[in-house]
Amino acid sequence: MKDLLKKMHAWMTGYMNQFVTDDEEVMQGIRIKMEHTGYVTAIARELALHLQLSEHDVQLAEMMGLFHDVGRFRQYSVYKTFNDAVSEDHADLGLKVLAEEMPYLSDLSAEDADLLCYAIKYHNKKEIPADAAGRRLIFARLLRDADKLDIYRVLAPFLEPENADKAPKFIKAHASAAISPNFIEAFKNGQQADYHQLKTLGDRKLVRLLWVYDVNFGWTLQKMVERGYIQKIIDHLPEQEGVDIGVKRLWDYIEEKCATPDCAE
Image 1 (cartoon, rainbow, N blue to C red):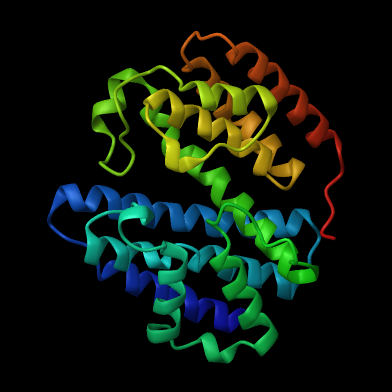
Image 2 (image 1 turned 90 degrees about the vertical axis):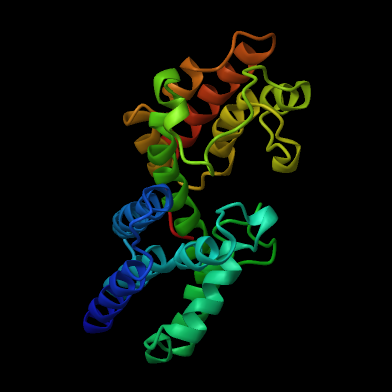
């Protein structure tokens, strides 16, 4: 398994390098995805160790982090966007890439290949299927957490007003800072909001906070708090009625979640 993991790392590095270009605007997005891949791979391994998974499963988690966004590179090459809604679901596209181009998938056992593909398929969906159980559920939860934790890192610099104009096109949002009423209500009630109804920059900021309610492990939330990701978003929210209620509810939830021991069951 260890040797296979090394081969997969080498393949992924070569695959990503195929998309390197002299076009700096394109490279801004590609570079972000290359760095994100590295961070999520490391986080997935670290979280698997925290959950005290077996050495085999720690390596499998690392593979999931490595390949979770492999579809992003073909997506940008074909559609010139990272927006799934106007192109193709990048997780589903990633599974196509692995099936067509990655030569080592067949070296995994049938069970491990299923777990890898399942976690990748659902790492970006609104939720994990209700019938998910056992190792499928463990790895799907783990990969979603690893991905979210690093997305906060990616997006954090662009919260600053002086950096807003430097954000890649796939990060930029509408200029209005106000939060739409339906997003305020979701925040007050501790609920996920409908991404398809995003209208303003304020909505987009708030959605990032609402991701907290979809984080599976207290370990992940603790890292988000320690790194200042949560507070930074809160500091950049507009002063608007209902925001303070949502913020209090959020911190109460985080405190309770972080106080609950994590388990891989």
